[in-house]
Image 1 (cartoon, rainbow, N blue to C red):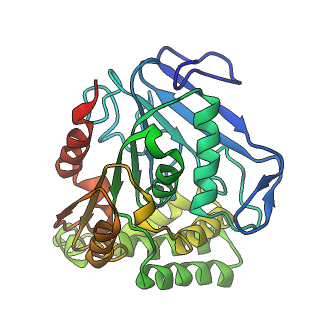
Image 2: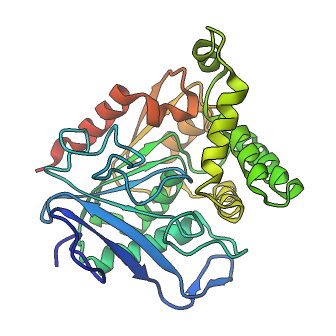
Length: 320
């Protein structure tokens, strides 16, 4: 079976595939808790025999890194002719356990980044992929990618980590605590979720970016409110709480990630400061740190199209 051959679902359009993998029941978690009837939704796009690239995004990302209708979460880098070129690469993405989408919903249990990685490994094995050419993880997806890289060992050729580190910063933990406090005060209402997400956005950007964007008198408050309300339409408070806590508790020793790694970050990132990136690079056995500057802060992996594409192209240099 090819790396991403379709399973358990009816045939999809040419070069597209996807499905929902039933995980072992119950699915045991690091915390000692379990998920009952857990499932993992996934999508593949690209030639079936092409090198496999796994693409993992932030907590609001989903299985569709790119989509036929343009609704993918990372259309800037994924697709025909893009850095992750679907005419010569097979891209695999998943929803998050405990997140939005078709994967198992949050149920009050603690789902770690390592739990997400074990579920992904089960999917990779079920799809018959013996080798992963490139694993790309951004933000929360980078936390999971570190755990998955350790599990894959020499089955993985190369790892790219964007705006992520081996643990959460104390600032990020405190910031997400306030977001969850808003959910509790608002009794998990859509209004509370929208407000929590609006607060989160302030951690993804920089003051300079906001000054530039609204220099001509735009309404920054309305902009935040609009983003928060849109987010609340397709995400739940339980999912937001679950994945935020998962990111808070993420911890891995960079020394156990032996695969050649490119670590990309920006000095203006409030959530993943450069000190953490340098600590990761110093402790990882085979890591190249690409440290840049960006007015976009943590959102650089989404907004700095050229710089990120350069990182991906370099990592793919050995792709047949």
